[in-house]
Amino acid sequence: GAVVSQHPSWVICKSGTSVKIECRSLDFQATTMFWYRQFPKQSLMLMATSNEGSKATYEQGVEKDKFLINHASLTLSTLTVTSAHPEDSSFYICSASLQGANYGYTFGSGTRLTVV
Amino acid sequence: AQSVSQHNHHVILSEAASLELGCNYSYGGTVNLFWYVQYPGQHLQLLLKYFSGDPLVKGIKGFEAEFIKSKFSFNLRKPSVQWSDTAEYFCAVNAGNNRKLIWGLGTSLAVNP
Image 1: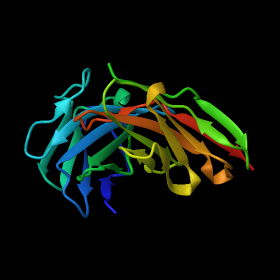
Image 2: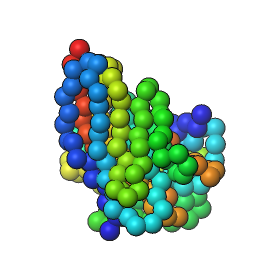
Image 3: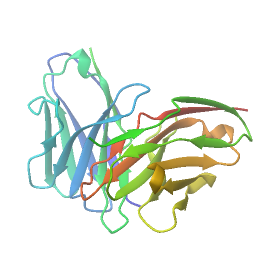
């Protein structure tokens, strides 16, 4: 089945530094990817939708200059958290929309970001 | 605005008990409906989905869900839960041509052995 590989699975960084999270579709082409943030014991909050070769569409309240999304190829989308602060600590999940009439979504395993 | 409501936030059951988790959505047009499960420490997995056809959908691991259009509902059921069903369950809706998923807040299910 369609697999999305997300790396790293966890990262600890210092305040003020930037962190890049990668999401790769391993056996299919992902024209659309979604980036979510999940707080403990809560639902997924959609941050942005990225389409290959175009600018990402950010949800209201999400700072696009802080959460940089690049979807340069059909198999790779990246999320860079710039100038990270402790409040950016969270679980970040990517998801790819699959093709076909009865499409679905496949999810990465998530990245636990801790900013100290 | 479109929204998804999951009524049960925390559910505790004993093994072999029956399960029903509620999910209601607000959108007047065509919808696609999903239930996802997140086991502790793992990524989201699709339990089942509904696009069209038979409103009673069978999923993996003995789960099923029924789409009742008149009630805007897509409740998840399992006749006999197991300890291994302990997880977070999320209902999600995709409306119209927009591939964005609208998520419910999730239900935490704990099954006691």
